[in-house]
Image (cartoon, rainbow, N blue to C red; front, side, top):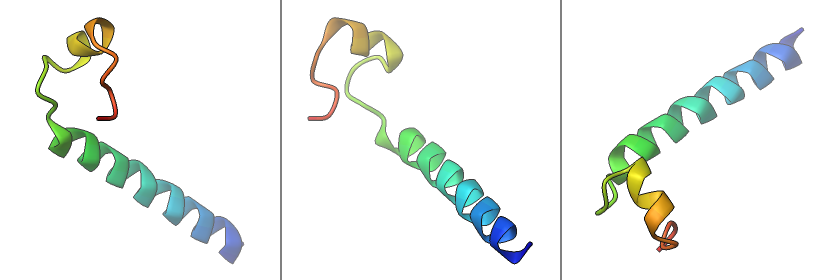
Length: 43
């Protein structure tokens, strides 16, 4: 039971951290629209 709570906490934290990273990234293009036009996604 404790292990389930630990895994659930890690899952929630990783989801929140991923959302914050995506919001803070703010790419130079127009967000989702720039992904289709350019291949420089991780540069």
